Length: 101
Image (tube, rainbow, N blue to C red):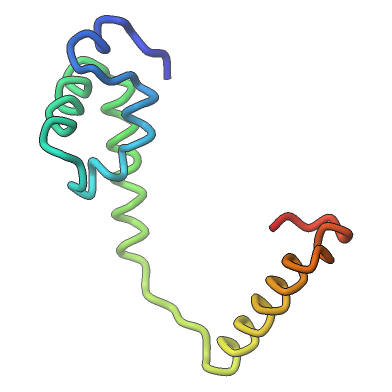
């Protein structure tokens, strides 16, 4: 998103600042002064309003998905695979196989 100087003057936040902390804003985890700045920025920036609405919509959709958990057997297998991968990464083996850790 392109930052506009008038938005920065009024709110003290750029569009980048807002997009970086949009989830915190929606989860009500920002200090009161930052919330006010978000409100001022959103009042003057249609692009950021749209972005925040989209993030809120996606978050709501994800929260409403059914909770699925692996079976105990699959959970054990996953834990073993993660542990083996971690050991490989710590020992440097995964770098030889070009895996990113």
